[in-house]
Image (tube, rainbow, N blue to C red; front, side):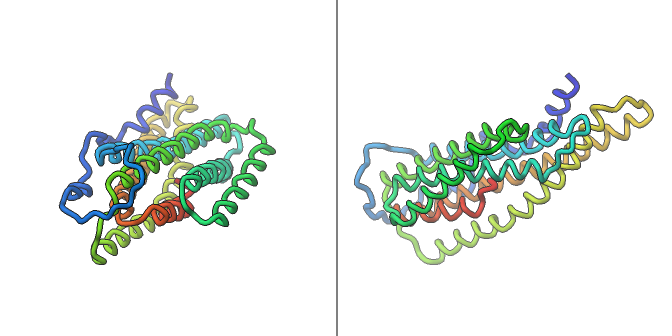
Length: 282
């Protein structure tokens, strides 16, 4: 019961995200803009509101994934087991790469991308699948992370499908160079911030996991208050950086949605593929 209470406190100590909030980035997307016909199938109609909803679902899936990294390390390192952030991250990277390759093949199967590119990703997915089959799936971190990573990439796939349906029904919006360049610049700026935030999160995760286990396992009343304060401080720091990363992801995807609306289908596929390749960690 004490462990459950601690985990509840840890990830509810900051309530800085509201699922009902409107995205200010998209407030101007209803403005008039010339449309080019880029559609052969308008049978599936997806609204902009639905895309915003799917972006939030993807954001939440990424957040849950980041939380699971902490809970995996905290649970794995109880009772003085020698499990480090490196061990957890190694399992995470293997699984993230596997599901990224699976996602990429699904994305490419619906695109007009070059066959050489498609064959490359099929080969890489085959390699990742073979490695995963030979892996010791009884490792605790693997078991803890696999389901949540799969859910993250399923949310990504749902977002991609929704965006493509939206663009097929709405066509390509014309743009001036200033607008397009500004969107690319803002996306690149946030993308450059995320790796540093992730490294910070990993560092804090180790400290928070250790502080949690020390507090949970403490039997000495003399340092109870000190351990409680350390637990609260590290929990607050971890919650802040985790929420920040998740919100940055939502901001990027909202901006990218606007950017993709200016591109034909094959260029949209390449943009998303390259973006996810850079950030397999997400």
